[in-house]
Length: 153
Image (cartoon, rainbow, N blue to C red; front, side, top):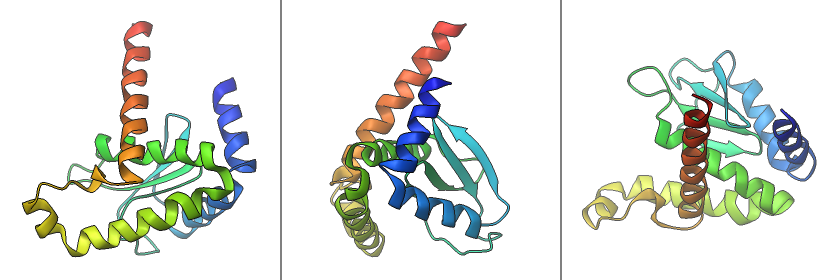
């Protein structure tokens, strides 16, 4: 409980710019499914039924936004990846939008446009900065959560 409080406090102060934008997106998407994913608030949204048409997944401060998968829930790998971005926000604070947000957005646009070519070359979306960094932290947090749940059993 204390760690979640400290996480939220840090995201709302040191990570204020991106958390504020995340809060605005949270409001703009309208009524969607919201769950705590680690210490972050994850919105699992159906872009077809959301007020705001949002094409992909994004992490802004303590808010993560993940498209609903075919089975009606969030893909755990994508949720973990977006959660990894929240650690980048904690580390970089107000520099996050410049150091991660812009490169991530540009890479996402480039990757979507050239998905077939990158796939043929075996280049994954998470192969480049800052996605590889978020992937590393997201997987590490997921392993930690699994280990904690096993210890609790």
